[in-house]
Amino acid sequence: MLVALSSGEHCGSLSGGCVEEDFLERVAAGQFQPVNQVVRYGDGGFAPTRALPCGGVLGVLIEFIAPSPQADAHLGAIEQALAGRELVSRHLQLGGGQREIGTATMGEARVQVDGERISIRMGAVYRVLLAGLSPVAEFCASFAVAMGYEVIVCDPRVEVTSGFSMPGVEVRGVLPAVFIAEGGCHSSTAVLALTHDPKLDDLSMLEAVRTEAFYIGAMGSMRTSSKRLERLGRIGGLDARVLKRIHAPIGLNLGSKTPSEIAIAVMADILRVANGVSRAEV
Image 1 (cartoon, rainbow, N blue to C red):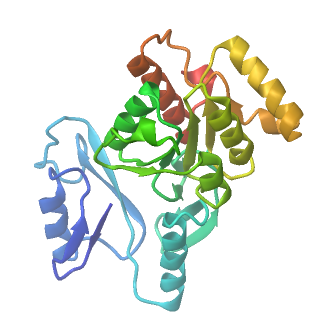
Image 2 (cartoon, rainbow, N blue to C red):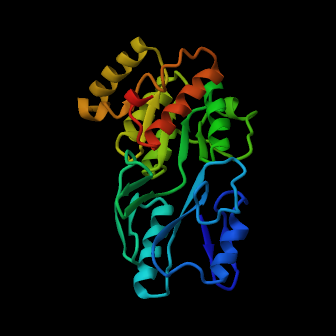
């Protein structure tokens, strides 16, 4: 995302540097009409002399936002969504200046195009909440940081967490269930129970299903997972609809054996759900 003024001031980027200079020159020259529009760089694009280093085509959605109370309200709703209040969908009409804000769910595609109408799902940065530390959890934390996610580890076991430190990972010495119950999850949160310790895993699952977390999962074999779900239903009074929210066994079935392989399967499944891809499509 890039915000630019005709004066040349700008913040953000479009493609990591390969078209920004040309785009900003065109903004300064007033070459874009003050309407919602899509322009394309690359093969067949409007800037034939600006080839993309990787080939192909880059589509750029351009919005012209003039100062107004309506624009302030629209941007305010986006700010609230990015703060984790709720997921929203921005609906833009190409060829004009119409824009609306609606509700969204995590299962929707991030961007949907229907003729001249474009819908964009927006929300807080994805958060991975690790309910306890383990070798698999450590790899999940590393992968999640690399993917740009916010990562929080909740584990009251000082003997387990004392030697753990990873850039980009916040460690809280509290029960994960307590952190969740006190508002630690929003709709862009994935809650992962990866310790095989029922005191951590089960209590975390019981609290997580009461939140808007988009992904809730617990590690274990098919047999262990079946027993866990039966136990959660019995102890927590959870019905089949609620239990269905829990991914158990967690992750995609990739034949993973080692902690790093299991973590790859877990993070791949989180990405699948976040992008609205069904298991049948994988």
